Image (cartoon, rainbow, N blue to C red; front, side):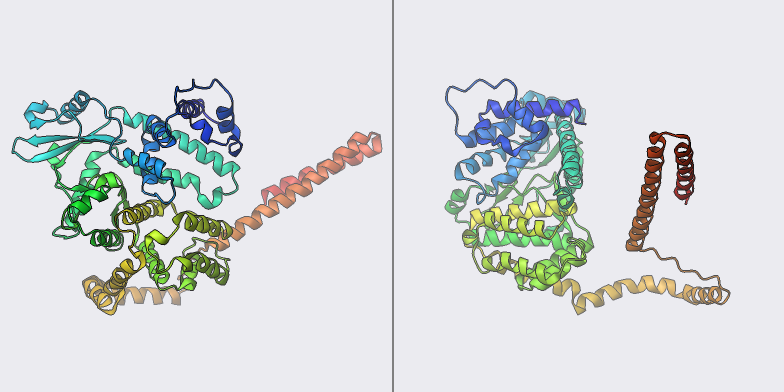
Length: 542
């Protein structure tokens, strides 16, 4: 049953859509259940004197609906190949031009969090925000030491609004999981849970500061990427103070050209930064929309806003790297086999069929620059393949997929002639050589030798104990197979269903005899019922 608060939020969404005139863009036949009812019935919002452009209407609706919807629009804004130009241009404004909250409220949050007046903390504090985003806004300031900084402040009351929308997403995910046949593959409950963790992490600016410091340490001295310094003494859960940087917004391609920035080099470095963070560090900036990225004249990136950071396990990292390498080598059989081995598609999938489907999607786009690739068509084909082979969404990789789309979108804007495959391939080959080559294996062996040596003195006693237990019949081996456990559970369930079916049949026959009337038939019916009861009792205890 849908909760009243969820219905209230759905009704609010409907009112916002109507207020911005988006009902004219919706096909009600595509919806069912409460969504269809909310869109179809009720008082309509008064018509505006003049309908604004659809892009402005969509942006306005997302802003009114709150942080989660704004973040959705931010992600879409990097995919100009999937959107008409008028909509894409408006969604770009969501990246750093969300309506601000009053500067006096920001000062109050800073003073409450840091426990001192703003005048005691800063030599200067500008109440007019530099930028305003969905979760926080940024103010320019200067410390008493003279350092130029920016002060990031969470929006007042933002956590309550986010938790309300998360409750709605969880409710919709549960409904989809129950009533939609495609839910098993897309795993909406797990995806929403992963998204919840990500967005709630954004509400802790101490965590964001730690993320920034870690990535800054890993790219110390890098010619490709610079991360501003964090001032931890002035950082709390809802306030963060960071070094103020100077750079050209990555989305302003015309200014980059005027400043003489090498756009080809910048695009190539963006690809290398992504693979370095994923494969070398297993930790990556997962919110790389243009509002968070700047560039210098020497084609060096500057990144800010580390509220969303992705990480992957060693196992997933090796699977991803292997998939990329096989893909760049056009080894579609290996791509298919790895998807089956990892469980991303069912184990009974025929590799040769899956290989053919992947080849049909990927082969036409090889050796083409970004400008000649229709990613809308490509994504459609990939979704068709995923449905056909029952491919499941991997919730732990959702951020990685989102970031890869952001990188591709940035590359398309900066240098449409970029060959993504040829740019990434040398880096991947180098990574495999460094991580999995003979020299890497030898280095790992040397690193583990001290640990092995510390256990060598115990080996004779352990071997003696194992042999002694085997000789005296005390050695046992316990093995559990998920497949066998599943089969055993299925057999047990089928056996119980069979018993219940037989018992139900006996009860039905006995009841029919009783209903027929007569002494002899009644006695026969009672006997059948009694026998069925005993049978059921015995079988259900088995």
